[in-house]
Image 1 (spheres, rainbow, N blue to C red):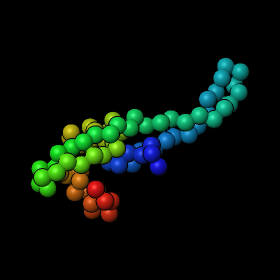
Image 2 (cartoon, one colour):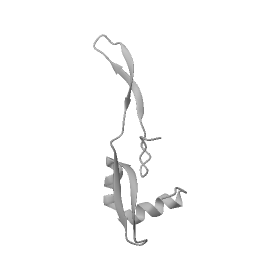
Image 3 (tube, rainbow, N blue to C red):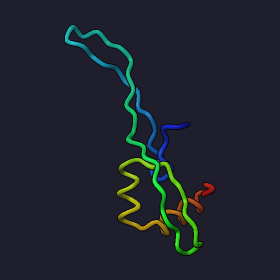
Length: 78
């Protein structure tokens, strides 16, 4: 799944576009996924994550060490 945030888990949303005549067609909302490289000082290496804009704010708020520890507790491989 390419449109998936590794930190927040946000994925593509689906719904309908509704025209002026009220005709409905399918559409999708893609999350703002960015590829970011972070330095992990405790392990002396860099990691690359696919994160949404919200995920970047979570990493800025909590710190990369705390986020990686939480992902590993959840069983994800980093």
